[in-house]
Image 1 (cartoon, rainbow, N blue to C red):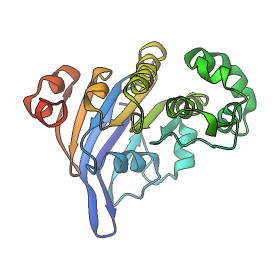
Image 2 (image 1 turned 90 degrees about the vertical axis):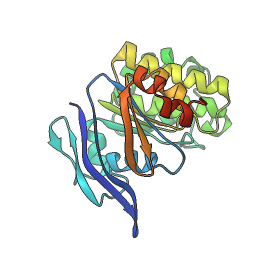
Image 3 (image 1 turned 30 degrees about the horizontal axis):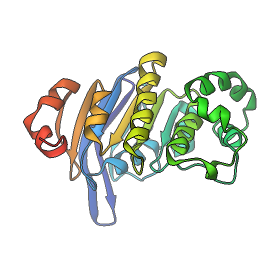
Length: 234
C-alpha cells in the first residue's frame, strides 16, 4: 500500500475534528473522500501532508512511518497537495508559478514542460501572463500543474471544484482522470461534489463529522441508498 492512515486523530483546541479514522490508498489508485462541509475532509488531507498537527495515530508512506516529518520533508518523498481555491502566486507569471513547483531544480521543469503544456494547453497560451489574470478554472489547472512538475508519487487534491462553474469543474475532473488513467499518478481526492468525484474514482470513503461511515468501490457507493440520499440527490 502506498499510503496508510492508522487511527488518525486531529483536534482544534479541545474540539476533536477527526476521530481515529483508518484508511489507505494503493499505488495507481484514484480514491475519493466525500462528505458534507465540516466533515473533516480538508483537516484529514492537511494532516497527511504534515500541515496540521495530529493528536494521535500514524501515517505510513511506502512502508515508512512519516508521522513526525514536517511538510517539506513529506514533499521531498513525493507527496504533493493541491489546496482548495487554487492557491497560486498571483503576481508571478504562469511560467514562474510552475518554476516554484521545482524550486532550485529548473532543469527538472524543462524536462517536464512539454508534458505539462500537453495536458494544460491553456497554460502554454498564458505562460507569460500573471496568475491573477487567469480565470478560476485556469488557476485551478495551474495549481495542479505546479504540483505535477515535481513528478509526485501521491497527489492530495482538496475541493478542486470549489467556486468553479459546472463546465470548468468538468474540465478539471477530466484532467485528474487522465492523470490517473494515462500517467498512473496516485490521487487522493477530497470533494463535496460527490457524484463528479466518485465517477472518476476506483474507491471511496464517506466521512461524516470526523468518522468514516461508509466505504466501498465506485459502484457500491454510487448505488448505496444512504450515499444517494445524502450526497447524490436521491
